[in-house]
Image 1 (cartoon, rainbow, N blue to C red):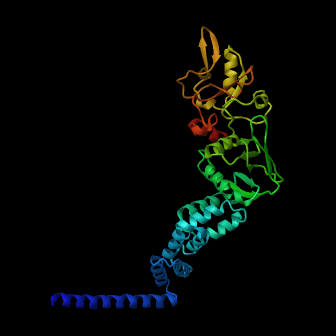
Image 2: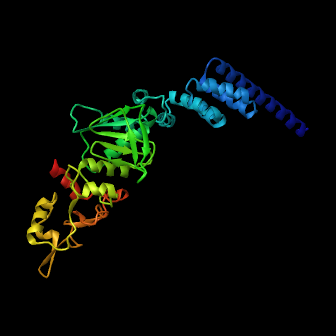
Image 3: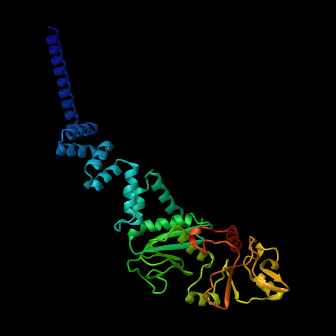
Length: 371
């Protein structure tokens, strides 16, 4: 008797529960058809559990188009082939992660100009995007430029490299506060590599007093007017090349062709960190004093005797290894037998080996003294 009563009660409870479930599904369907995004998402989840993929896709999509982010996430996870579509919906819904992903992809999109990119993402609160937009803003031409630089690219797909250059400038050890840097397109830009050292050599219809060419191959290089950067130019490489514009010469061994020009004084600009002398073993005190007076860093030294060592009445150029500032051999002119290059410090700086990222305080003081 009791067993029968329990069965009856169970059936009644089951019937009531089934009725509640049915009513809930009816209400969910009604709200979904009325346009309730949350209900549409829940109805889609219901169909997905029942393996009704088409119905689930339909209701997730309707919910996503109303910028209901849980539905967008479901579409991204379950229907990845249409990921770009769902990402755009997520962007419209204000999702920061989606904004960053789409904005990052647009940096290499040739159809999106730098101005379009700025205008689209100008109101974004996503931290990465904000930092990039602030970087562009920081270096825009404000009419008070200490240095104006045009970054020249073959197409708008090079926006990421432009931003990388701005970042390297911002992180440079020298003062770039009043630099102005713009992005310029030159569809005629073409680059090859030379046969000797694989340096990039580019031809451009655009010509500026200071320009950065974004080459598509080769090794980075610099002259007094142009920095040529390649896709693998790191921040350290960029800062090394900028160092040339600031007045620093290479401290590694130059190629024979470059050394012939540099070490024999055929360049018409001064260098802050390198002097070149004849490769003598012995000097007179008068000669040492003359070299001392010519040093860009003589103000860092206490006297002319800091750059030479006297042994048995004979003077030899060069400071003791323990000195923090003086005259130390550099490899710059090693390709030339009768010339010796000298630098003020006895450490490997960023001008010898860029990945050290070492810019001695003495070098930064030389820049201030120059300016």
